[in-house]
Image 1 (cartoon, helix red, strand yellow):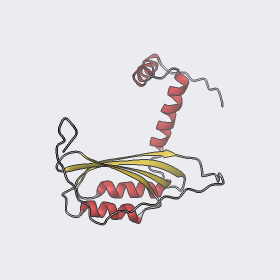
Image 2: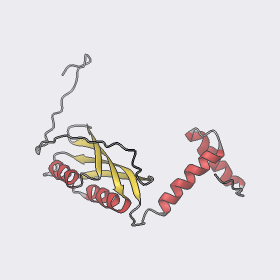
Image 3: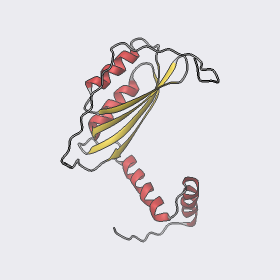
Image 4: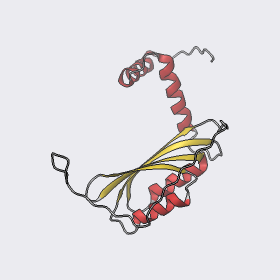
Length: 165
């Protein structure tokens, strides 16, 4: 680890201290490291490269939009090497939230996320990419299997206080 000395004006330091207080940082070094990482990631956001990354893709969509749930499911299956896991939440009668964990080359992950967010019926979307080190072989393999039906239906009902529907 390297030690750096920087000079910043008082107003900027006050902003950093406010940021630290809001986020609960104990020291400036950790705050500056996180701010630098975030700034570098933002500055490099347009880069199209093959660096490995992990990402979360979060989006809210209209589940009644024509064929959208089916298209989204097909996209995930078509990119099963990227999509690691998905959480599906029913928000209300019309809207669902999905959060998908993606892993792969930065350019491929970003292209997939941008495609999903651009789908007609997706109301809000956000992708957060984080760089990861290249995979190391630890001498063991993981395998997972799961099945999905091609139909995607939703039922929405209100639970009573006792938790029964």
